[in-house]
Image 1 (tube, one colour):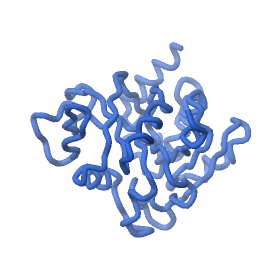
Image 2 (cartoon, helix red, strand yellow):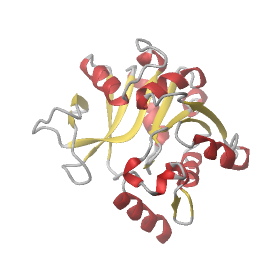
Image 3 (spheres, helix red, strand yellow):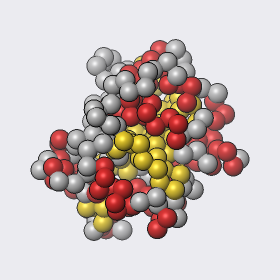
Length: 237
């Protein structure tokens, strides 16, 4: 793989209030919730390092200072960690990403702060790089198994992505890993409150959202049941 592809930074969206995990998240941010005996972010970092991804930009807000205090610049993990704080107001997943653009360069991965995704990140990055599209969404054939399916994916093409519109052809779900070119976000204003899902939907409408199908299921700690499941999985390893 070419060096520039391997060096895509990873933006991790971790600025939300994590209300579904209260009261746990009233005193600690979601990234520091203990999973299998250590903070969840440690598991994420280990997975990213395994995939050769060592430049991390954390988009943080609520209690983000606690993450800075524990992980610093990433030297202890032999990675580079930078931080982008929302500021006075929560900017949403898309707004946080726009704010972090100066730290991200021309192309970058995007990962949610509650997602544990055991996939080949480099393969996703290579395929996106060759697609010449502005964005890439990884998708999983969900068929309502883990959450509401929200993607119509057919013959390698994302025909529709929507969290509000439901069609019978929607058998896939947004897997949680994206790749974007910075130019995909150029029409949005800094400090604008934007949901990343809106950006992805608009890219899909102009045929600039590439679909990459993942066969292995995703894990998450965004809900108590998901947290328990991942804790059991990683503890057993």
